[in-house]
Picture 1 (spheres, rainbow, N blue to C red):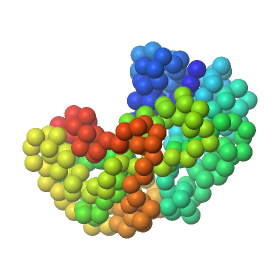
Picture 2: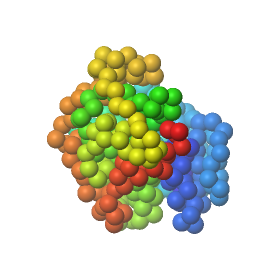
Picture 3: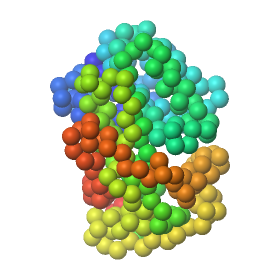
Length: 279
């Protein structure tokens, strides 16, 4: 049995579906009651209380561990989740980390994530670490304005990074959960090419079959919008990456191809699959 945390999100849901279709017994964990793919068992647990995972972990052989941002806050103990997994007899953990632990290692969240990677390495369990860069699904931030006004409003319109389709992250995670050859591997996950916000708007327009205007925000305007839903420090951190990505953040990684035997999906494919969000 395989336990998937964050099972109702844009990585956990396709991962759960893929594992079920592969004939695996899957326990889908989320903080609240929710629909999960047919064939999976659903368990409500709060990762901020690692002991609440025990019913989900009982009898499990593997765990996909995806942490929400609040699990890096002061007082949180994500390392205890790995302890609970080991105590429950789990043999393999695939951890969703972030490319930022190597490209920008000194932010508080990335320091905490690197420490969790180290805890996992020292746990005695089989492990794989996935380090994705920017997500294609971050374009959903624009869904409301596209629906209402056919406008994408974003800063740094002509500065891009190789964003990855969350479904590709899920596919890599499924492979790593099922294939021993990826034990003790670290995979950096990106899309197939650098794409700018202006180009993403064009891809959304093509998926919709109607024009979408791009409006470039100033950094101050973007920060004001972002701080409605995230701390100012995280907003500044994100804007630093979006405005001036480092060579490491611009690099297109070969790891999706190595793991899956195919190239990562382009942003246009993600936009086509998710076009309903923008209608």
